[in-house]
Length: 373
Ligand code: ADP
Ligand code: MG
Image (cartoon, rainbow, N blue to C red; front, side):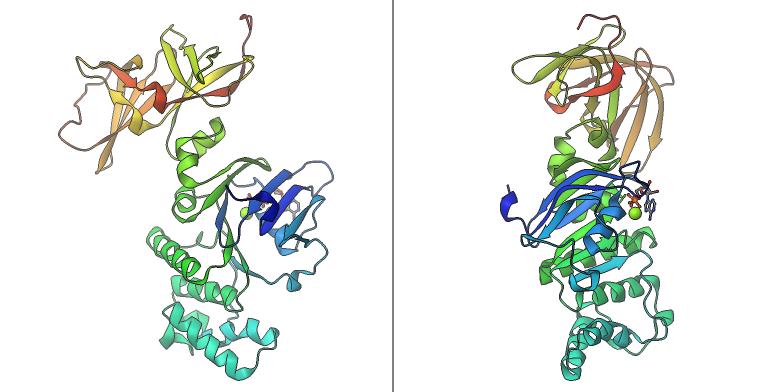
């Protein structure tokens, strides 16, 4: 794990309120190493842009502090922070050519003309737009414009680059192409990125670490595989990837880090403990759709639940099967579309099975009532 004391960029107990009443960022802590690609991932309104604005210096920090290389930046003016920025609608100057747009940040920094021309040529080549230097932004496609915006944010070689939903306005294919492009430039040039998105697949593909954000608080800060395979709580388990969250009863914790619980109809279940502790709340069992099996005769699983088949959604490379759980709720099973994909009739009873090691028990919001604690 990175050494927090030596982190390149560090947020310590940062809070932000706009109205002196509600905290839109609440005790935000994050340590980022040089060269990392960090994504802030969370639903709309969770405070992601506010964090970037405080880092860029366009918003005050209500309390707490931000340091770069150990130096507090709170009192440094925005234009002196040497941070590159790309936003969804960060418009290029329409009256300037592509080359002039790229030259602009260098002119502002008083780089000599010959050096500017050389640097602009280098960056046009880097974004594979060499023949387009004399065009105006209006003569470029959306994807090309966003590549120019990216190059303009990088051309003065800032150590830190902030990107706020930079691909939000592009269609799916172009977005994937740009994800590839940004990752390539990041590897090649080695700057540190703080990237903001609400798109989890974008976050998983590009980032070295992801801070999952909800209601102004970091829910988990980890690498993509750890977030998917070891989510810290029900919010993360549900936000990252597809998931089944099955409402269960009282969690019984054992010393080996496992939880036993039951469904409303008494079906016993076991799972790895996620964040259940004092048993004052009911628990949720979390299991990924690709870890669920439709039980075949002769098969046995740690967990087995009787269900009724509802419907299936044909996706092409895989098929989603929906089932009714005992006591309410639904479960989805994701199976590869191969010869083993079963045919089921509406309402047909079936059993779903899964390994205890593949599932987690998390706290729900539902308190235990009238049940022994
Ligand atoms: P995100 O980028 O995750 O969508 P934001 O940081 O934009 O979230 O917003 C977090 C919360 O702060 C929202 O409730 C939003 O309405 C509020 N907010 C954002 N900017 C301002 C502002 N300039 N003045 C007042 N409230 C704001
Ligand atoms: Mg935002």
